[in-house]
Image (cartoon, rainbow, N blue to C red; front, side, top):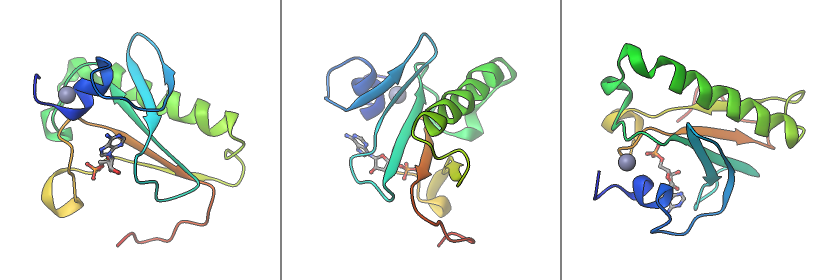
Length: 114
Ligand code: AMP
Ligand code: ZN
């Protein structure tokens, strides 16, 4: 997708604080962090929303969770806990239409979310 912010970050056309990458995904610091740790995990493949996932994406999405757990562990959030979440469309407040898993950690997170 030529006009996608996260594809541009993936391609190095827009700078980001990339903290992890492999053949399937890329992780970078959220520009407007909502917790002491706020990292976004994106697939290299452009997928607009969770609604667009197909069976062939299942391993990719699973990989985002594995990568998020690895970073959470490296930052010692695994015992205290953390939240991983994907927002979908308007009611969830999705603003970037390239799926991304938010990793939020480092403070007590309330539930239900706003
Ligand atoms: P969502 O509302 O779930 O679509 O989340 C989009 C997230 O992307 C928000 O938390 C933004 O702060 C974050 N974001 C927007 N632009 C950038 C950027 N250039 N670099 C890093 N994070 C960004
Ligand atoms: Zn994209």
